[in-house]
Amino acid sequence: MYKLTIPALFAFAFFMRPAHAQNLELGPAAGIAYYNGDLNPGMPFQDVEPAFGLVARYSKSTRWAYRLNILSGRLATSGNYARVDTVRDIPFNTPFQEAGLVAEFNFFDYFTGSEKSYATPYLFAGLGATRIQATDATGTAWRLPLHASFGLGFKYSLTNRLAVGAEWGMRRAFADYLDHSDAIPLNETAKWDDPGKTDWYNFTGVSLTYRFSLQKKHKCDAFQNRVYKK
Figure 1 (cartoon, rainbow, N blue to C red):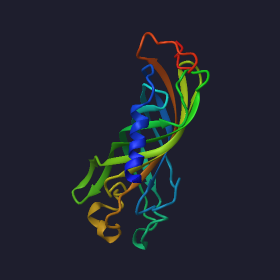
Figure 2: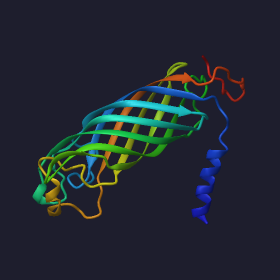
Figure 3: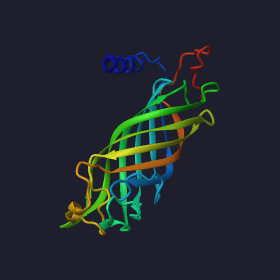
Figure 4: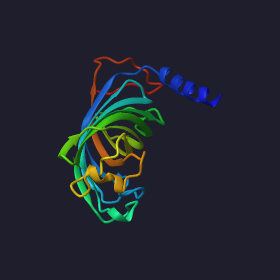
Protein backbone atom coordinates (compact mmCIF):
# COMPACT_ATOMS: atom_id res chain seq x y z
CA MET A 1 0.00 0.00 0.00
CA TYR A 2 2.80 2.42 0.88
CA LYS A 3 4.44 1.78 -2.47
CA LEU A 4 1.31 3.12 -4.14
CA THR A 5 0.47 5.88 -1.68
CA ILE A 6 3.83 7.68 -1.55
CA PRO A 7 4.24 8.12 -5.35
CA ALA A 8 0.59 9.13 -5.58
CA LEU A 9 1.05 11.86 -2.98
CA PHE A 10 4.22 13.06 -4.74
CA ALA A 11 2.40 13.21 -8.09
CA PHE A 12 -0.56 15.03 -6.50
CA ALA A 13 1.76 17.67 -5.00
CA PHE A 14 3.44 18.15 -8.38
CA PHE A 15 0.36 18.46 -10.58
CA MET A 16 -1.70 20.49 -8.08
CA ARG A 17 0.97 23.16 -7.55
CA PRO A 18 -0.47 26.68 -7.93
CA ALA A 19 -0.03 28.66 -11.14
CA HIS A 20 2.68 31.26 -11.02
CA ALA A 21 4.62 33.68 -13.15
CA GLN A 22 7.34 32.09 -15.25
CA ASN A 23 10.88 33.08 -14.42
CA LEU A 24 14.39 32.18 -15.51
CA GLU A 25 17.39 32.68 -13.22
CA LEU A 26 20.97 32.60 -14.49
CA GLY A 27 24.27 32.94 -12.70
CA PRO A 28 27.65 31.51 -11.69
CA ALA A 29 28.38 28.79 -9.14
CA ALA A 30 31.61 28.04 -7.28
CA GLY A 31 32.67 25.54 -4.66
CA ILE A 32 34.58 22.33 -4.09
CA ALA A 33 34.40 18.76 -5.41
CA TYR A 34 35.54 15.52 -3.81
CA TYR A 35 35.58 11.87 -4.84
CA ASN A 36 34.31 8.67 -3.17
CA GLY A 37 35.11 5.25 -4.57
CA ASP A 38 37.55 2.36 -4.23
CA LEU A 39 40.42 4.71 -3.30
CA ASN A 40 38.28 6.67 -0.83
CA PRO A 41 35.21 4.60 0.04
CA GLY A 42 33.58 6.79 2.65
CA MET A 43 35.52 9.81 3.88
CA PRO A 44 33.71 13.07 2.95
CA PHE A 45 35.55 16.28 2.08
CA GLN A 46 38.89 14.50 1.56
CA ASP A 47 41.34 15.93 -1.01
CA VAL A 48 38.87 18.56 -2.19
CA GLU A 49 39.49 20.46 -5.41
CA PRO A 50 37.90 23.71 -6.67
CA ALA A 51 34.99 23.55 -9.11
CA PHE A 52 33.15 26.28 -11.01
CA GLY A 53 30.12 26.46 -13.23
CA LEU A 54 26.85 28.02 -14.34
CA VAL A 55 23.27 27.62 -13.13
CA ALA A 56 20.06 28.10 -15.16
CA ARG A 57 16.85 27.73 -13.13
CA TYR A 58 13.29 27.82 -14.49
CA SER A 59 10.32 28.18 -12.13
CA LYS A 60 6.59 28.43 -12.61
CA SER A 61 5.46 27.88 -9.01
CA THR A 62 6.64 28.69 -5.51
CA ARG A 63 7.40 25.03 -4.67
CA TRP A 64 8.98 23.57 -7.82
CA ALA A 65 11.89 24.63 -10.01
CA TYR A 66 13.95 22.95 -12.73
CA ARG A 67 17.65 23.58 -13.13
CA LEU A 68 20.47 23.01 -15.57
CA ASN A 69 23.95 22.65 -14.05
CA ILE A 70 27.22 23.11 -15.94
CA LEU A 71 30.32 22.37 -13.83
CA SER A 72 34.05 22.08 -14.39
CA GLY A 73 36.68 21.04 -11.88
CA ARG A 74 38.95 18.22 -10.78
CA LEU A 75 38.59 15.01 -8.78
CA ALA A 76 41.49 13.80 -6.67
CA THR A 77 42.54 11.54 -3.83
CA SER A 78 45.74 10.66 -2.04
CA GLY A 79 44.74 6.99 -1.77
CA ASN A 80 45.13 7.01 2.01
CA TYR A 81 41.70 5.41 2.47
CA ALA A 82 41.92 2.80 -0.32
CA ARG A 83 40.01 -0.46 0.16
CA VAL A 84 43.10 -2.66 -0.43
CA ASP A 85 46.78 -2.26 0.44
CA THR A 86 48.08 -2.74 -3.12
CA VAL A 87 46.90 0.72 -4.15
CA ARG A 88 47.08 2.50 -0.81
CA ASP A 89 48.76 5.92 -1.03
CA ILE A 90 48.57 5.91 -4.85
CA PRO A 91 47.06 9.29 -5.79
CA PHE A 92 45.09 10.46 -8.77
CA ASN A 93 44.01 13.89 -9.94
CA THR A 94 41.90 14.28 -13.06
CA PRO A 95 39.73 17.01 -14.65
CA PHE A 96 36.00 16.61 -15.17
CA GLN A 97 33.07 18.51 -16.67
CA GLU A 98 29.42 17.96 -15.83
CA ALA A 99 26.05 18.74 -17.38
CA GLY A 100 22.92 17.83 -15.46
CA LEU A 101 19.19 18.49 -15.15
CA VAL A 102 17.54 18.43 -11.72
CA ALA A 103 14.16 19.17 -10.16
CA GLU A 104 14.06 21.22 -6.95
CA PHE A 105 11.34 21.00 -4.31
CA ASN A 106 11.10 23.99 -1.95
CA PHE A 107 10.03 23.30 1.63
CA PHE A 108 8.35 26.74 1.78
CA ASP A 109 6.75 29.00 -0.80
CA TYR A 110 9.61 30.91 -2.42
CA PHE A 111 10.38 33.18 -5.33
CA THR A 112 13.19 35.61 -5.99
CA GLY A 113 11.97 39.13 -5.38
CA SER A 114 9.40 38.32 -2.70
CA GLU A 115 9.23 40.41 0.48
CA LYS A 116 7.53 37.54 2.32
CA SER A 117 8.56 34.21 0.75
CA TYR A 118 12.24 35.11 0.43
CA ALA A 119 14.00 32.03 1.89
CA THR A 120 13.62 28.26 1.84
CA PRO A 121 15.54 25.01 2.19
CA TYR A 122 15.07 22.62 -0.73
CA LEU A 123 15.75 19.09 -1.97
CA PHE A 124 16.84 18.21 -5.49
CA ALA A 125 17.32 15.13 -7.68
CA GLY A 126 18.10 14.55 -11.34
CA LEU A 127 20.25 13.01 -14.05
CA GLY A 128 23.29 14.11 -16.01
CA ALA A 129 26.55 13.16 -17.67
CA THR A 130 30.15 13.56 -16.52
CA ARG A 131 33.03 14.02 -18.95
CA ILE A 132 36.25 12.70 -17.40
CA GLN A 133 39.70 11.51 -18.43
CA ALA A 134 40.48 7.82 -17.87
CA THR A 135 43.51 5.72 -18.81
CA ASP A 136 43.45 2.20 -20.25
CA ALA A 137 45.86 0.00 -22.19
CA THR A 138 45.47 2.16 -25.31
CA GLY A 139 46.18 5.44 -23.51
CA THR A 140 44.27 8.32 -21.96
CA ALA A 141 40.86 9.23 -23.35
CA TRP A 142 37.79 11.23 -22.40
CA ARG A 143 34.78 9.19 -21.31
CA LEU A 144 31.17 10.24 -20.70
CA PRO A 145 29.43 8.19 -17.99
CA LEU A 146 25.90 9.05 -16.90
CA HIS A 147 25.15 9.94 -13.29
CA ALA A 148 22.23 10.39 -10.89
CA SER A 149 22.36 13.38 -8.54
CA PHE A 150 20.61 14.30 -5.31
CA GLY A 151 21.14 16.66 -2.40
CA LEU A 152 19.86 19.60 -0.42
CA GLY A 153 20.34 23.34 -0.32
CA PHE A 154 19.10 26.74 0.80
CA LYS A 155 17.93 29.75 -1.27
CA TYR A 156 17.72 33.37 -0.17
CA SER A 157 16.35 36.32 -2.16
CA LEU A 158 18.74 39.26 -1.80
CA THR A 159 16.88 41.80 -3.95
CA ASN A 160 14.06 41.95 -6.48
CA ARG A 161 16.34 40.26 -9.01
CA LEU A 162 19.25 38.64 -7.17
CA ALA A 163 19.28 35.42 -5.16
CA VAL A 164 22.02 33.45 -3.43
CA GLY A 165 22.02 29.71 -2.87
CA ALA A 166 24.15 27.13 -1.10
CA GLU A 167 23.96 23.39 -1.66
CA TRP A 168 25.51 19.98 -1.01
CA GLY A 169 24.96 17.34 -3.69
CA MET A 170 26.15 13.81 -4.48
CA ARG A 171 26.59 12.33 -7.96
CA ARG A 172 26.49 8.56 -8.43
CA ALA A 173 28.23 7.66 -11.66
CA PHE A 174 26.96 4.63 -13.58
CA ALA A 175 30.59 3.60 -14.07
CA ASP A 176 33.62 2.51 -12.06
CA TYR A 177 36.46 4.36 -13.78
CA LEU A 178 36.36 7.90 -12.38
CA ASP A 179 39.47 7.03 -10.37
CA HIS A 180 41.50 5.59 -13.27
CA SER A 181 44.39 7.90 -14.03
CA ASP A 182 47.95 7.40 -15.19
CA ALA A 183 48.75 5.93 -11.75
CA ILE A 184 46.14 3.15 -11.98
CA PRO A 185 45.13 2.36 -15.58
CA LEU A 186 41.94 0.47 -16.46
CA ASN A 187 43.76 -2.73 -17.47
CA GLU A 188 44.94 -3.17 -13.85
CA THR A 189 41.60 -2.78 -12.14
CA ALA A 190 41.13 -6.49 -11.43
CA LYS A 191 43.77 -6.17 -8.71
CA TRP A 192 41.74 -3.84 -6.56
CA ASP A 193 38.26 -2.96 -7.89
CA ASP A 194 35.14 -4.10 -6.04
CA PRO A 195 32.86 -5.83 -8.59
CA GLY A 196 29.53 -4.09 -8.93
CA LYS A 197 30.63 -0.94 -7.10
CA THR A 198 30.37 2.42 -8.84
CA ASP A 199 32.12 5.72 -8.18
CA TRP A 200 30.64 8.81 -6.58
CA TYR A 201 31.60 12.47 -6.33
CA ASN A 202 30.26 15.52 -4.58
CA PHE A 203 29.87 19.21 -5.37
CA THR A 204 29.36 21.61 -2.48
CA GLY A 205 29.11 25.28 -3.34
CA VAL A 206 27.26 28.55 -3.65
CA SER A 207 25.54 30.30 -6.54
CA LEU A 208 24.44 33.85 -7.35
CA THR A 209 21.58 34.15 -9.84
CA TYR A 210 19.76 36.99 -11.59
CA ARG A 211 16.04 36.66 -12.31
CA PHE A 212 14.55 37.32 -15.76
CA SER A 213 10.78 37.47 -15.95
CA LEU A 214 9.36 35.54 -18.91
CA GLN A 215 5.98 37.27 -18.70
CA LYS A 216 5.33 41.00 -19.14
CA LYS A 217 2.25 41.14 -16.97
CA HIS A 218 1.32 39.34 -13.76
CA LYS A 219 -1.98 39.03 -12.00
CA CYS A 220 -2.12 40.70 -8.63
CA ASP A 221 -2.60 38.37 -5.68
CA ALA A 222 -1.36 40.32 -2.69
CA PHE A 223 -3.02 38.01 -0.17
CA GLN A 224 -0.91 35.04 -1.31
CA ASN A 225 2.10 37.27 -1.96
CA ARG A 226 2.60 36.02 -5.50
CA VAL A 227 3.36 39.29 -7.24
CA TYR A 228 6.78 39.51 -8.82
CA LYS A 229 8.28 42.94 -8.59
CA LYS A 230 9.99 44.44 -11.60
